[in-house]
Structure formats: C-alpha cells, structure tokens
Length: 407
Ligand SMILES: [Fe+2]
Ligand SMILES: [Fe+2]
Image 1 (cartoon, rainbow, N blue to C red):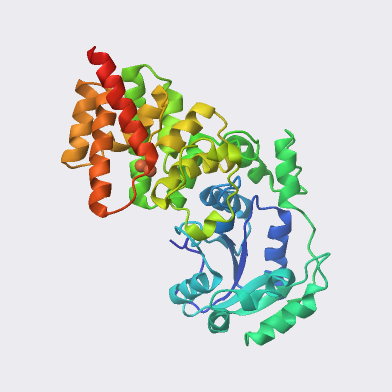
Image 2: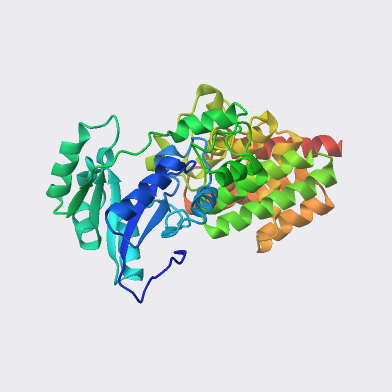
C-alpha cells in the first residue's frame, strides 16, 4: 500500500524519494529532505523506510511498521513531506528497482528523483536491475560527510548505468541512529537537536531500544511482516492453543504463549540467508541427536532467531521452539505443549489434526504425541523423505511412557 501524498495521480509533480532504515528517523534525515526539496524545487519528498534486510535476519530489529510510524510522527506539520510504506508493508526482499517501478506505475505523471548518498551510489551497478533504474527516476547525489572518496566512484557508477543525476552541495548534520539507540538503551532520552520530540515520545512509549525481550505487540508486528499471512495466523493460533493447553496441564501460560507465537519465526528463512545466521555450539546442542534436514531446521533455527532477533532468553521457551518440529528424547511439559499445539490449533483442519485434538483433550498429551509421531512417520515415508531420528526418539519416549502408565 502506498500512503497517499498531496498531489498524486492527477498533477505532474517533482517528487523526491529518500529511502533509509530510519531506525530511528532523526533530524539529519528530516533536514536532508527539507533542504533538498527547496534546493531542487521539488513539490514533495517521500520518506521511504526500507523493509527488513534479509542478511540481518538474526539481528535485533525494529519492525518496519514501527519505523514507518516513527517517520510519520517526525514529519507531522512539515509541508511537502510524506511517508511511503511500500517497502515495509511488503513480505520478503525489497529492491529499489521494484519499488521505483511501482511508484512510477502509481504516479505516472510524476518526475521521480531518487536521493542517494555517495557511498550507496558508488555500488549502484551491483543493484538488481541497475540498468532499468534510469527509466524510472533521476538521482540527486548527496555527499556523505567523512566519505568524500566515494563521490568520484558514485559519479562513475551513475554514469555507467546511464542515469541522469545532480549533485547536492549541502552538508547535513552528522547524526547517527546507532548513537541515538545507545542513548535510549542507557535510559537517556535524546534531545530535540537529535530527534523530534514526538519521535522520542513514541520510542519511549513503545519500549523500543531498551534492550531485553521485545514486547509481544512488537513481536507480532514483526512476525506479520516476515511470515506469510497464513503462517502468521497459524502462529497466533498456536499461541492461543498453547495457552489453553498450559492451563489444562498446569504449565506457565506466559511462556506457552511466547513459545507458541515464535515457534515458526524462522520459517521464512531461506537457504541463502542461513550463512548470515551464526548458530553456536550451544544452539546446536538444543537438538544434539542428529544433523539437520531443511524441513526440521526451522525448529532449532527458530530458537536462534527468537534469541537474537527478539531478545528471548528464557531457556524453556527456547527449548520448546527448538524442539517443535521433531520433539526429542526428553521433552519438558512446555516442549510437549508447543509440539502438540502446532497440530491442534484452531486453524488446522482434517482427520489427522482432529484426532490429535481428540486424544489431547480426552486422553492427554502423551497419547497425542505418540499418535502424531506415528502419523508423521507414515506421511514422511510416503513422501520418500528421510525421517529425522528425533521423531523416532519422540515416538519411542511416548510409547514407553504409555506402557509405564498401563503397568
Ligand atoms: Fe513449524
Ligand atoms: Fe507451526
């Protein structure tokens, strides 16, 4: 969705586009947008917060929608500036060429000016569809303080892709988002010479940059942007179901909700992203019994992502996320609950899931686990895929416990 900005489709307008992570947006960004608008006679400037970068999947993040809201707060009352959510509202990877093509399509009468720092422009020939960029926009090249060497390279790179460009001679205040985040982390509110007061207020209210575990609201916003809509609904269903089962079987409901919500958080991680995620030996030790097949990997990988991206430190929650794909030789009550809730959440339909649900409610977790494992093994055999040894361990553990109960 593109948030409307003044003018738009009917009138031809000179529109600047200023992209960035904006984590958080600060006065340097605003001043850059306002000055460039004046200096180049633009009618408006769109601030375009970037999507979540795929190579930083296992890093702490600020959900895109929250960065968008901060940007909206920052430009309140400033004429000619607006915010565009086209990238943060998209799932998966975003590329400048696709975004610009979409903007050109939506506002065909506009002249688009992509505002770009010399350091980024120096590498533009490597961007996806770099040679098409000139069809959508021209460029305003901004000299980065402390990165003067890049200017020459940037000029060459823009010429190489056949782009039209102008150079902005202004220097903008060198404010760093990293420094601002550090201030918040240290309990300090950055002054209004660094960020607009309204932005500081929203950051403080949302608990952003404080370190520690992300709030449930923020986790949900982030999951909504990284998972498919179906997977997101399923995750909410597993969280609710895990709470119901925790209440029924006497486990911690808060931990059950968190583990349920995050159990599939690594589901969208692609093989190409794996190289950016460092799994330590401790992470692997969460499931020590076998190697990984990609289908089950999102369990242990999910625990890594929950820890690094969302700041979860509770070892019981991490264990339940890690073990949800296969189970394991030993499973805590919480592990069992999340394992089963994945089958019994309300959005699952079909005879198999119905039977797991019936067993859980009428006979308990262990018979449900035994049945779920048996059926899963049959399904995998039918597919001709290898069975993860932990699925067999889990089945055997459940069968043994059932036999012990009978005696
Ligand atoms: Fe899963
Ligand atoms: Fe799941």
